Image (cartoon, rainbow, N blue to C red; front, side, top):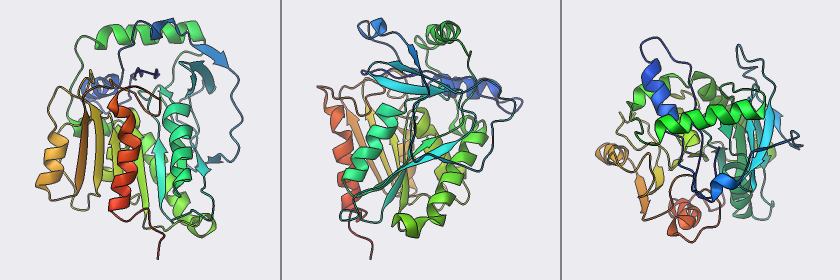
Length: 323
């Protein structure tokens, strides 16, 4: 889960034998500390909201998942969990403003929840206002307890084990457990390309932006997502450990707060790796902002990440109408 000042849950990831512990650590690193005043905000179950325009992807139900999807509100936002069937929801710009660029938006939530509003719909609406077609990816999640008290207890247990010592597993290992989510991302890219004419999208100008766990998925999609081939990617407060950069790696935008409790204290090998591979990379390290600032209005300069991101897109020509 995610709060205004930045708190998200981690997850227990299914992994290949021998890699389970490292992958569990990667997912739990997506958890955030919760400020004292934010702890007063209780999770409140809500009805699954209407999601007009949501399109079911062809990846099918998550194997072995039988707990129904449920939603809750917290910190002035809404969250989905136990997502068994992936969907993508288009947020299309005014045709008079449309520039042909599209972005797949991957919310975070530690692969246990999805911050659908703060890191999904609000981001997509802001992109559409700038002429970019945005598509919020509701990807499949690891199952959590169906009743809210049990879910809250499971999250409290997770926080108690990760706050003091954030794990730092190898990126290659952490991506190994994301097979269902990578399949969902690939399906989203395939759908957008199939309907590119209808949605006035240039199939060669589809990027992806992800937050925390969604940033992990964004990196995995760019690196091992086969036919997805995003034109550009943005990693917003996700892992920044060094990786092996593939030959066709796209331009990369990274935004992170220096006081992020999980990803700001282990070096910035990701940026170094992209530079060493002579791939375009832009990195914004904000003095304050914690983890999970997203689209929440804050007094810290991290709030400026979205304007910086769209300025970066403008510099690369993706905000100009496609020729």
